[in-house]
Image 1 (cartoon, one colour):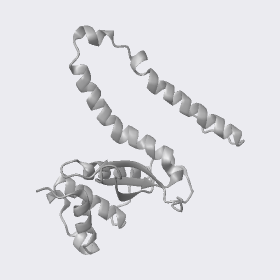
Image 2 (cartoon, rainbow, N blue to C red):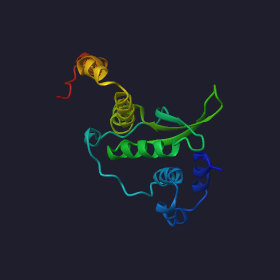
Image 3 (cartoon, rainbow, N blue to C red):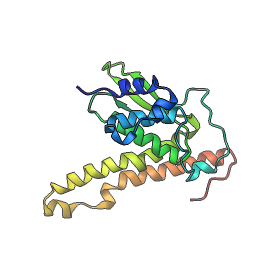
Image 4 (tube, one colour):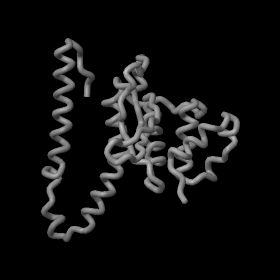
Length: 193
């Protein structure tokens, strides 16, 4: 019988700092490692990640007063991989110095447990982009490769990257335009590209 992420997290939360740090992480299952990593991070017991990227340049305290926003969430079912996805998402955000917290809620429609990652609202756009690049796009690439692999040579030759990437490129152009227009409307200088 597999134990859910929430049950693992509850167990690790019941341990003292010394008991938690005495656990040999390498001996844990992947799901248990995710819950363990989350508990260690929540207590601030991990080694600080090196600050890198655009977020580390800001000298602004995060505002958690409005509760922040959920940047990603996963259904917590045994064997569903929620623990690994949460740990990977949080690690990607921490590399960029983005504060984050794990939060569990119940999905109103299904009644299933959801495990999510919260970030201060001010970091929402950066956090979403980082998770897209460092977590989500890897899954998309894997799915895309699988889809391409089943195509015949004739079907593969018909594909045109200018067409199948057009939606993504248009989204990028629209996001940049919206940002530049909002900065100008506030008489602020946009960051150079």
